[in-house]
Image 1 (cartoon, rainbow, N blue to C red):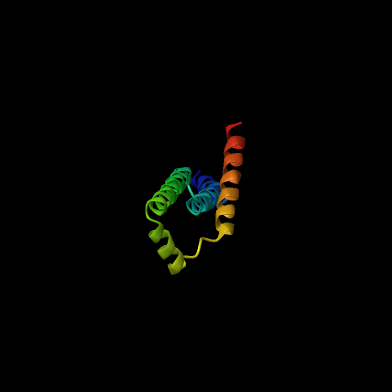
Image 2 (image 1 turned 135 degrees about the vertical axis):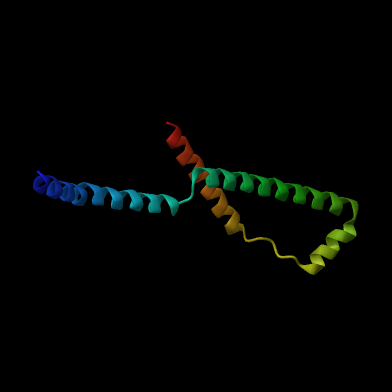
Length: 107
């Protein structure tokens, strides 16, 4: 009886247990390598906060320039280069893609 059970157990472990173990951990490694839903939501919140802060800074700069024309002249003399517009465009494109993918996931 033991002569039959041992080979059946070994064959079962080789053809069922080992592939299951390999596939289980390969799936875990793939999942750990990607960004999670919580991380994606956090990045969206951080982007929104950064955009609001940028809008506030622009508003403050306009108010200061209106109150003190010398400040605007000094700033122009320092020649602070503007941010590359292409970066903003790429960010807006990325946000549009994410919004579209979220809408598709909700369907």
